Amino acid sequence: MLSAKDRDDILEHAGHYADPRAAGIESLKLVQDRYGWVSDDHLKEVAGILGMSPTELDSVATFYSLVYRKAVGKYVILLCDSVSCWIVGYRGIRKHLRERLGIDLGQTTADNMFTLLTVPCLGCCDRAPAFMVNEDLHTNLTPDRVDEILESYRKKGA
Image 1: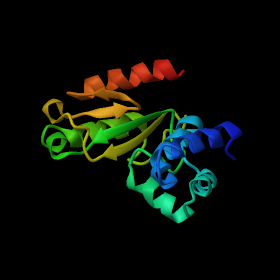
Image 2: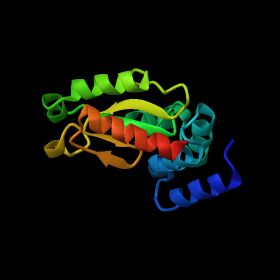
Image 3: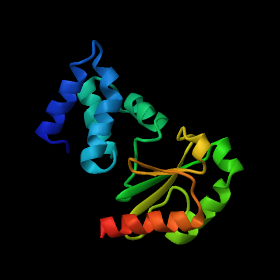
């Protein structure tokens, strides 16, 4: 259930637009920032506030890869699978990440520390292969560099 502050903040976003439905993405991001992901119940509440059907808002939520519709780990790894990354080592980095984390794409580690997802492009083709961990971009990845990066987040997250 959304809090009164959540509702007020969503209404404030909606007030910036002639059509409150235009605040759909911002409202979903607000919910995700506060709860870690967007549950079905939260989506229904947000849709009601914005005057949308849940199906309509869900179509917006599932279109954007950065709105999580199921629980994710503390750190979400978005592995770039653009052509540039594929050319310079995506498969090796993906394999290394899967082995190190013990999960497959779309899964979360047992300790809820990491979720591994792909993203169509991170816009840094000149520094491929690349991934983002939450808001942090990491480029020119090698298996050793991946290990260092994962370890730094494990230390932060402990």
